[in-house]
Image (cartoon, rainbow over all chains, first blue to last red; front, side, top):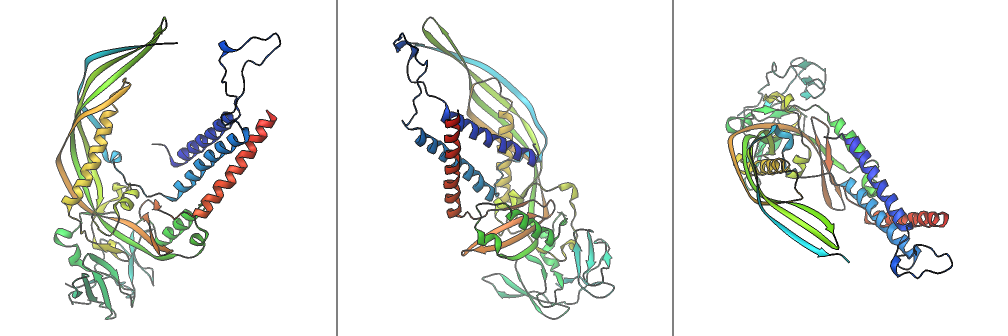
Amino acid sequence: MLKKNTKRIIAIICVICMIIGAIIAALAPVVTANAQDMIVQPVAVPVSTSVSIFGNDLLRSIVISAIIAAIIVGVLIAQLKTVRKHNTATEYSVSGIDLILKKDYFIRKNSEKKKVR
Amino acid sequence: MALYEYECPACGGIMQFNPKTQKLQCTYCDTEVNVHDYIANHNSDDNAIPINSAANLYMYKCGSCGGEILSTEVQGSMTCPFCGNNVVAPEKFAGEFCPDYIIPFKLTAEDAKDKYKQYMKHKWLLPKVFSSQAHIDEIKGVYVPFWLYSATEQYKGRFECAKIEKYSDSGYEHTDTSYYEVIRGGTEDFSRIPVDGSKEIPDNISESLEPYDTKEMVPFKIGYLAGFLANHYDVDMNEDKIRAKKRMENTISNDFKATITGYDKCVILKEQFNTKDIVVEHALYPMYLLSTTWRGKRYLFAMNGQTGKFVGNLPVSIGKAIATHLVLTAILTVIVQLLHFLI
């Protein structure tokens, strides 16, 4: 079992990673053009075309920021609720399980194939 | 039957159990006596007088001051509201109600109050009024009756599992799914799963305070109750057994499922449980209960009187939550836009 402080540190790291991931997602270009359909021009053209999901960078930033803010507020609310029912009794197990029966039987095999474009 | 009263053998003052020293201590002259060596006084020979059968209220007469001490049917350890004398009604812990064990308090009421204040700190969404005003109505050190269940749980489970293999060739994507019937069976021993035997304490509160360290559990002696409230059980051991069994079944099911590895999918077809060699013990566990009211709603907080673990559900300030969300959204939007401009 992890110590309480270790759990807290892991939770903070996860939240920071989520925030960084969301910021990168907000800034990353979205490729919508298929390379094969692009017409080759004699002048240099960008390989990928950046198109924002909602057609507006600011709106996209607001939506993603609102989602991250909701996650953070959710974490703050969870701080206030510490009463939990324990549906297991792992800490009262004397020495774990005694595995007496272990059998794995092969029944059948299904195969599917799908044409790839 | 007479009340047990805890008077100091040196000065006649009030004796109470000191969690720090684990001995009975006089609140006036600090005389200490070992719980096992102390013999309680019997100043009053009066039996309990029922005063309200509908509410199950009884009245005792304090042997020190003659004051009336009210108690419920289940309450066995009380304090005289007039002279502060600690009394125990021994018949409440006799016969079938006599506990086998007790975990004595290790922490004091002051420790509980400090933990409460600590718990309130750094809670950003807590209503300001709730944390700033003294809403602690009463802090009570209570011995709560628990049933302790030890048993061997037998398990047999049948599962349908699948291994999925994907590969591509010459314009096709293939998915091969191999199905297996998996059987697991065995046993698991459990020792002293606690289920609270009191209707007054919500189950989720008592379970949240776990675990208790049963290595510090001692044979029951009535002297440990001096200075604390204590009730005998009012939930039968057979009623609580259902809860203990459920916890054992969930645990053994999870433990056996963890032995099924190497598959991409696993579906339970059938599970069988059998509980045997059940041993039930009765113990009193220490708890501090803090009751507070806010906007007409009662909030109950509890602290494990042995380990200091503190639990309780606090209210959320909706206004603060919305304001926090809006401010965070604004700040993050500015950061994202700045990074977009810079990159």
